[in-house]
Length: 204
Image 1: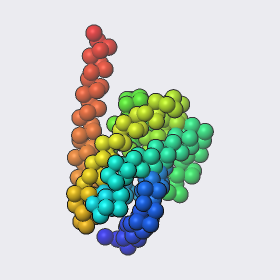
Image 2 (image 1 turned 90 degrees about the vertical axis):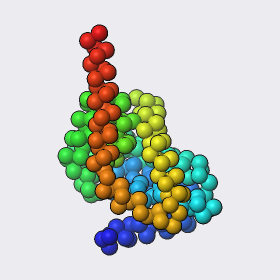
Image 3 (image 1 turned 180 degrees about the vertical axis):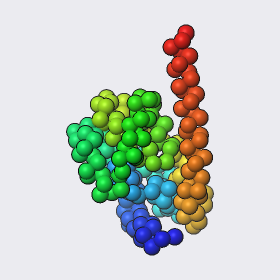
Image 4 (image 1 turned 120 degrees about the vertical axis):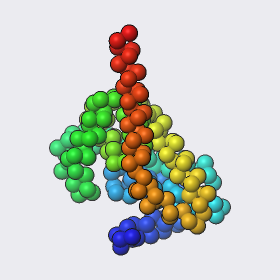
């Protein structure tokens, strides 16, 4: 593990331990606002705190969801009011590249509102999908609804896994990085089914 990742994990642990639900919400808000803070670390540690009796399971889930929605809303606002040039100029400071943004834009252009929901399960895209939603002036209520629907299973699964693993919660982060390609394949399969269904409706 690199020293940078070790320092990042130590910060995540310190903030969540000291601030509880507020710390979890803050960290998830940063992650969803395109700051490179992995939810694969934040949420399992929240689950560990649940196992230790320091947090309630559904309280941790709701804190993660609330933070994710807040951060996604910030990204949406940046896209809505700033547009691609502003987002790219500022985003480079936190590692946002033009190809990240273009990939998210292609998802949104092809799958519309559903991209906001399904992209929450796909590496890289899930962090940046809020930006093209803002560019495209997606209705705010629909954006928040689809973001919540897409984020809910991810949040529940990671908090539950952290609770189940207990003191070994940190084993999840390298596991998720190793099997990100499986998530990509699964997400692509779901999208192909939706696309086929849409084409069939047009033909009929």
